[in-house]
Each structure stands twice: as C-alpha cells, then as structure tokens.
Amino acid sequence: MIYYKTLAEVELMRQSALLVSKTLAEVANILKPGITSASLDTFIGDFIKDHGGIPSFLNYNGYPFNSCISVNDVVVHGFPNKNELREGDVVSIDIGVVKNGYHGDHAYTFVLGEISDEAARLVCVTKESLYKGIEKAIAGNYVGDISYAIQEHTEKKYGYGVVRELVGHGLGRSLHEDPQVPNYGKRGSGKKMKEGLVLAIEPMINLGSKDVYTDEDGWTVRTKDHKISVHFEHDVHVQKNKPDILSDYSIIEAAEKENPNLFLAHQATVGA
Ligand code: MF3
Ligand code: CO
Image: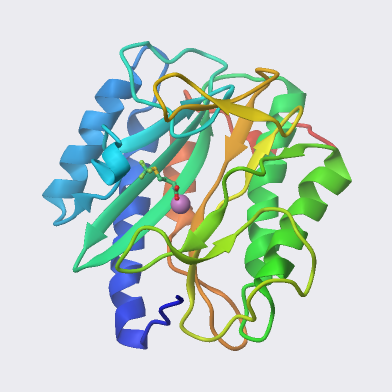
C-alpha cells in the first residue's frame, strides 16, 4: 500500500533527507586514504544523534551498523570495517536517518585519489542516470518511466550491468514503503505516480556484468566478476510539474571539491 504525503509531511521528510546530506558532506570533509570505514561509521552515528536523528539502518532487519560503506566490488550493504581505505578506492556511502518520525535515505559514491578513465566514467554515468530517472518522477508518469530512463542511460548506452536484485523504494514513516522502483523496466509500466509520493531512487550500476551475490555475512552484496559497482541515491517528492529533490548533493559536492584526497569523476576526460 502506498502512503501519499501531505505537504507538511514532505517538509519533515526534507529535514530528514537534509540531515543525511549534511552527514555525507561531513564525511566528504574527512575522507582520505588511511581512514577506516569503521571510524567513518562511528562518526556518522554520532553526527546523526548530535543533530536529533536516529540512524535508521542500525538494527533494521538485524543490520549491525549505522551506515553501509561499499568499496569497489561491493555493490551495497557493505559492512564498515577496520581496513584502511586506499588510494583508488570507489566508496559508496549510504545513510538513513529517522527524525520526527520520517526517514531520509540516500547515498553518494566518492573516489579516493586517481582511478582509471573507465571507472571514472562509471561514476559519472551512474550519477547522471539518477538524474535521468528523477526527471521522470512527475505526477501522471509511471514508475516504469523512471526505471526505463535509468536502464537506457546505463545498460543501453554504455553496456553497464544494472543490478536486478535490489531496487529503489517508497520512503516515509518506514524505510521501505511501496512502490518498488527498479532500475530497469518498461516505459508506462508499474504504478501511475500521484502528488505526494516520495521515492528513494537508487541506481546500482556495475562496470561489468549485472550479476551479484551476497557474502556469508548475509548482507554484503558483491559483483560476481569483482569489477567495481557504483551507487547513488536521492529522495524525491513527486509533484505536478517538476520533481522535488528532498536530499541535497550540492553541499556534498562542495565538500568533495575542497578535499584534495577526493577525485572528481565528472571532471575526468571520460568522453562518451
Ligand atoms: N538504501 C538502502 C536501501 O534502501 C539501505 C538499506 S540498508 C539496511 O535498501 F541496512 F537498512 F538494510
Ligand atoms: Co534506499
């Protein structure tokens, strides 16, 4: 069942989404080779609690950390750990908070130091595909229009692998609400969107094959071919004329630009 939000609820959800954005921007300030994802996870939990939120992933279906930190061939749901991050790592950080009863849930992929043009292009194109999907998140369009736009830009245009097992979702009082938002599908399929729908749109795109498997820990999702995977996620409020993005990448991107340890994938010579 889909829960449509009132404008007052949407404003509360914007606060939750922005707390995630601010947390990601703080992470962007401190990311550097040598830091461990476990220390980032502690920082993330403290920052959320200091700002009146609760990390929503912690204990969700038994998930044991505040955040998901997914490095290189890890697609999503990576466990923060004691390994030091290294130059050349592609690091997706996914964070959820609940504040005033509503969830924010979004993700950003950072690149530490230099990576290959091929990897940089994947980062850049995955982020572009998120916005291509978001453009379709307008009342009167279908959820499948979002799915199709993402798949076209990634699989069709660049031959990347679009993960099938994991999808975007509705967001609200629960972290996962209806409808599911696959990153693949047909135009005009699925639910017709109405005003007040709030979606977490989250392309998970592999450089190689779309195939993934889950580690013995029951969570960590990896690419079968161990090539890298990239994940970006925004929280989007569906309205009449244009999508309303509740989360905010601009503060994350500003922090990313200021941090000399981070490589700006979109500035690489990645061609098309
Ligand atoms: N953004 C992810 C999702 O929507 C994060 C969930 S991680 C979990 O599924 F730990 F909460 F499951
Ligand atoms: Co999500």
